[in-house]
Length: 411
Image 1 (cartoon, rainbow, N blue to C red):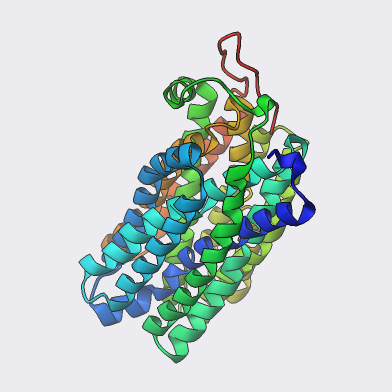
Image 2 (cartoon, one colour):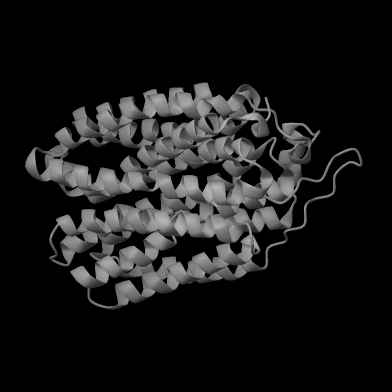
């Protein structure tokens, strides 16, 4: 079956399934920073231990994403996504019963990291791209990313409420309920496996040939390196903002409120950048996101923190949060077609996750050694500005292929 032959119900069921899957996977993961003070106190680990678990989660997510993407490109996304949900639940259980840094790291770092490879942006964007026409692809990816961000609006208040009233273990039980809701979502989203890829979006190369072409393409390499900074900045914020607010003497609930505001504004930002990506050069939009993010981080950490500045900061960052997803995925399809999209976005995402590792772990190490986050945010701002400028100069010409290949249309 081709995407054009889908009924409206079939198309919407796939897109809603992808949205819910992404929403809950990312919503829970981005709320883990709220657990840091309680876990440090009750389990007896340090801030660096907690940060290392989160950092390991990100690097495992990145390392496994290309391999998971290759499995999905070859054998379909449904079983990959279902397996990811099961592993996610196992990770939450290990976190809940953890009595040492090692056990907490196995749950939060290893299991959740693998699960995110199977359930988050790479899989859901692949499903979305195959379900809609090329003309609607960018805005559809923006819409799924936007809906996907609603999970943070749900997960962070749920976690903070349960942590405050019943304890952090009960909050993880609440997260297990959200994980259960991911199972039917994966089943619905997996229906995209039945769809044929249009000739205009296909290439007649092997996976190895496409990967070799991507790694030799200057634009793809620049995009992947700039994606490193994206991961560093965002995970530094989600992991350490609650602790930073506690240091400043602000109400602990403000951290949950800020994460919820990020999720809410991300709804509008993701859709807007998906829409804009279908009308303007994606590399300029990406570079602009990185630059504005960096300037916003600089302004927030320069001035004394307050409830007002924190909410304003969260609103601006939320508007720029996951808007990169439709732009990066759209550039991959524009350069290399749709056949190996999950594999190539997985390779780019590996760079993102190396940055996430440094943002999570490095922030904790800097805080443990210096007693503040000053050097961490200064570094995040500097490299963010450099990455934004480099991204705008990215080469967006598709690589040369053998004469029998069809050049893919723009996403």
